[in-house]
Image (tube, rainbow, N blue to C red; front, side, top):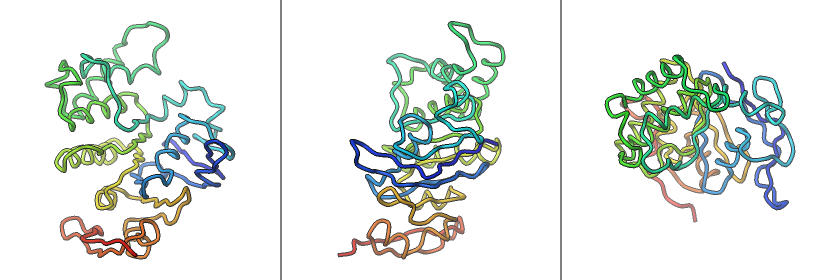
Length: 261
């Protein structure tokens, strides 16, 4: 299992502190959902912990090693990150996109190995894309396109998968399609999933662990029952909420809310 955690992590833009002395650990084998208002630092934290952008101070450790001292290829063999609304080159097929996930295991212009092809076929099968693997990515529906990007990430053969708002711009059916796929990867493959997500009910339903952020600080983290309550949501989002237990899932669910004036 891959371990990733931040210790006293500070992130700043033009000397303005966005995230201040953050301590955060993602539990191996669990789904973690990061929630919070727009501009609170969710995506920034995800990208910094994946070494896509620099930190101001503090440290991020990947399997006990400082991530900024770890090679990009080694990181890519342990962690896959899917940014918000990625774009594929026009005409690129699903199979070709997924094959990019094998890049960390290749050198120069070497061809795909037998194992590379096996991993691509496995990713196609797991995400339900085998029958349309030669279709161009830019012709897919929103849910299919997101599944294709997830397939590329899991073909990377990492234990840790980090996703920045994987359900953005998707209709409710496609949102569930993507989240159920992530749940399946976690339960059947043991993948550690970390995702930034806006829908609080989806966070509560699918995540083992929730992290609620405001202005770059962790306000509360824990189970859905510990985080999805009126007091925490009031503090984080400045809203007055009504929370019930969803009879289908047994998880807390927000059924109404209003702004606090």
